[in-house]
Image (cartoon, rainbow, N blue to C red; front, side):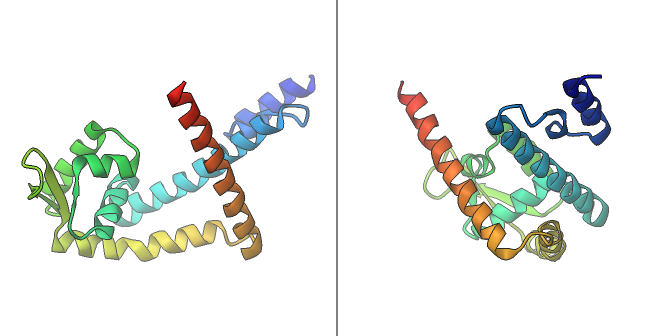
Length: 174
């Protein structure tokens, strides 16, 4: 079996894309797939914890988190932009959170076409109950990496993000 076939077989065994590449494959592709693999592993663990410990989903947690940061509320459009998802995705989640009494909708005082979404008192409490478990889990995922390495990784990812934003802005104007 050649190296590429061996790597592809290992990919299926490990459940990620990164292990399907060899050292001769492009470095940029390998880095992107490693980022994707790490992100997926962390997200899968957090999703499972949110579901098992709190009976909620990560997208619901993310909505509560954004609303916790903005006590005056957010419009549905602002919430969608912050979460980087479509208005349709947010609408269904917000509807369910309203039904559970965790958030409320009210007309915006600045734009009568828009509605503000805010946390209710039970919503604030539910979010506050989840934060310690979420924070501990994220911390645990990075516990094997030294602080100075995390700082360097954060800086490098910031450079990558800036580069991506620059290239995307150039593509928008082309």
